[in-house]
Length: 467
Image (cartoon, helix red, strand yellow):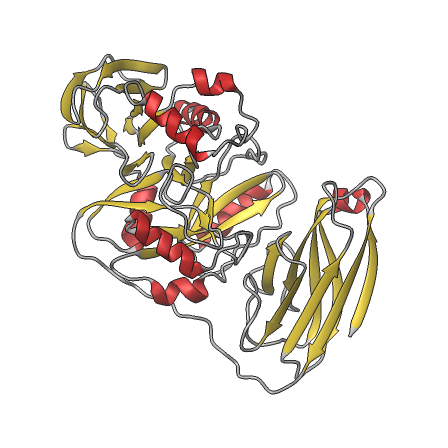
């Protein structure tokens, strides 16, 4: 057993929020155990992770062996197994690093103690699970959640419970974006099936912004320290053929880096009342500036250690709905990138589809004289059409199965649609407050927010106008 004591300060945090404690691992080691102890407090939160000798510094392609953030104070890595969030496999001899994320450091600094134990008992070398390629060969609208977590990062629930929650919600696809790690794939790669396709994802998580990476096999380095590192992140993702989405750009963790050449923006995270109007305002400004950026949604649900009943604060609230030629991971990723879909409040939320002529959501038209809209499940609510200048049409939805052609004035840059609660608003507010079960309003919401903010029930992707 080796014990290392270090004193970390705010000066260390300012110099680099990632603090490294090196240790030597000899040939023949088959297991490493690490324990972190410090006086945890509201102003003292230190994250935990591991890199092996292949780490070349940010951005590295190799050497990452795990991350648990502030969710754990110990881990093991062995040739045949590892703590959730950590990567089992070959134990490379040389200098390893315990990495500490200096998330909150008190004014006086903090003493940290790291204990390291090495073991060389014989163990198998277990491979990583192989990706599978399930397909459901049928075109149609498919429903999924693009942002959720298991105990491979900071949720309490196992992948099996999240799988059960997705089946309970009636989803067709699910992206599990655990924080800064990809080890949830131990379960989800072999469990992906034509009934429920699992999409490869990882949430790049820092103190000043979160982003989801989709469709990449390899881990992506999260150790961003400057605003321009957002462009490094974008290059890392796109070089590997993946998609980059900026997450929940709103209180309490807005995107405070440069805005990169992202493919998507998570415009709706958790229930609508969780400050999503801020994300939508920022999305609107980006579209108005000429960006082509697909809108997606995700619950950011952290699976608890039990299966919850359906309700407004669980998995698939909201749900991203995509039109796919088939259900497969490749088709989901292509539709996310193209914007051929919409976001709705739940798996049974309103259907919202717009097109102009033969051009569907995500497409580009030379002009948009009118919009054909199909809305289901929102009678008495409002359909609002919006271009770069703001709302241009606002009409009542006439029935629960409503198709309409709406002529438009000259459209600037794009047109997109929103279903806004009107007749359904009292019911939706009652469902939200009932789900709180007597607790105060979360996320620093005020009663005025509940009384005054428009509640979106569904958001379409834009149809763009040729410049």
